[in-house]
Image (cartoon, rainbow, N blue to C red; front, top):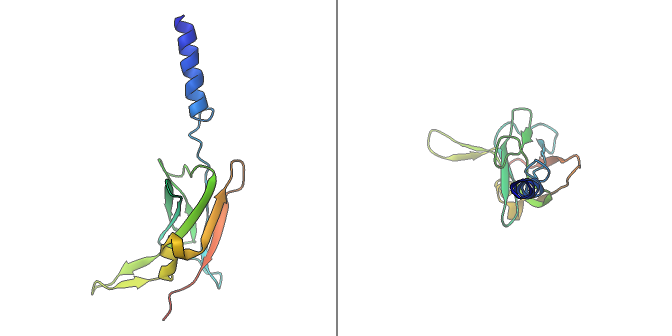
Length: 131
């Protein structure tokens, strides 16, 4: 009887975790400006009403998303995407490197659909801030 309970418990754990994984899909990409030059710093976030994953933008414009642990990605689904890149100067004024509209997923116009077994490489072009 103990063996049957242990086997049932093991099968339940495997089913819940997606055959040993957490159901997350590695996801990343590259952020560039319209002229093709990379955004060299900042962050990218993919979100739904109940889930979010984010990643840092590297100097070459690449990013990898993390949810529960570094680089694990996120579950398959449709996501609103935001990109932000800014710094604060000596006078505590915010200097935007990317148009601030991209920092809000509701105004960025960026979306992605993550699929299990897909490439899940999402490259986005963003605008520089207005002068």
